[in-house]
Image 1 (tube, one colour):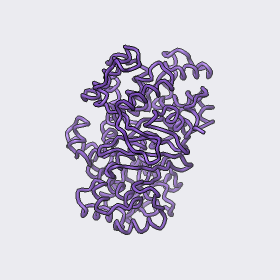
Image 2: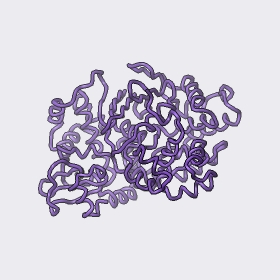
Image 3: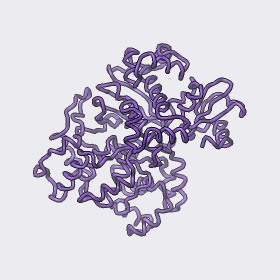
Image 4: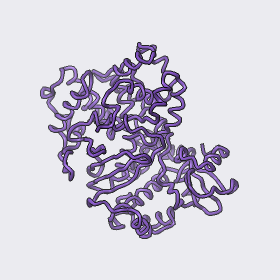
Length: 490
């Protein structure tokens, strides 16, 4: 979008928050870059230039605006709506892969050479993987500076910097303030959390956001010991690269409040990325709803409660296991089966608030389970053991960097995997916004009540007009049934 100057200027002049994250405005006279919704008086058109990423702005010598905080914009919805190499690379960078594995590790995950990855990112985002990761490190550092009392040296290494000097130079260059100045400014407006070690932050999103189906679904399907709904917040344990964490997510009218307790602060970038992915916070709900509203049978559902998101997962392998456990059984039965696996094979954790007891078991831990101990039909045992075996040995990878069609082909080749299971995993684990499950019982009931075609083939043909947002259409169709997944718990 940043190449369409006229459209960008209109968005800046109207201070339209829907475009935050789509592009950044750099002001040639002040050498500052802003989000489109910046509250200051817009500069003259001849003084504006537009960039596709904060990293590109920083590389061009611009610093972040202190008023609109462009580093806190929602991410571009493009990276979650596409499955090409650039989108997959952006999702991996957002997860901190470059900090942990370097550019060679990023390239290896994508199946390209480091030079090819560099060239493609430069062409589309105006910055290479190192610059993009540097911009993210700066954002993570600012969060740690402003929300914790960690010594600056610990902040530097937790944010992914290789040295304190690089950390100091980057923070000064990006924010035009020294780390100590950032902390002093934040101390006047940010309250320190009462619990030591807790990081409190706000997760932005594009309005509207309907929390009912999003948090209702997560609460209704919560696995005891791993997830819970408490005091208006969804809480769960997280398995992270350097340790583990516990997160509490609370919906508010203009943001999601996030409270993180991490055993290692180096996991902050990954934890934030996983939470945003879980809640689908980088979506563009206006674009999605406008297209789906064009269908007269869907329009009343959208007008009644716009802004529905797709509830995802923090771990693709975990969700695949839970999807198999949920085949042809009720939500309550699926939770019971999952809770048994957690108790037997999950790693215990300490929760200061009680309630959460374990991490969900990894595929490696489940690979050694005895199938005879599973209270499942024999065919389902085979399906589960084959799945965890493929995940443990690495022949099947389900993550934000997965190629959607390749993952579908690999899943359907496993015994016991039909279209419903594959598409549910594609929707919630892989994040494909166009996944569709016409054989789902709730979808079939909704189709009958709304007057849509009732057979899977006919419904799929009708749903072609909803592409590429059929996963969001599923969320609206599910609301036709009065099911707990559609309501926030009392």
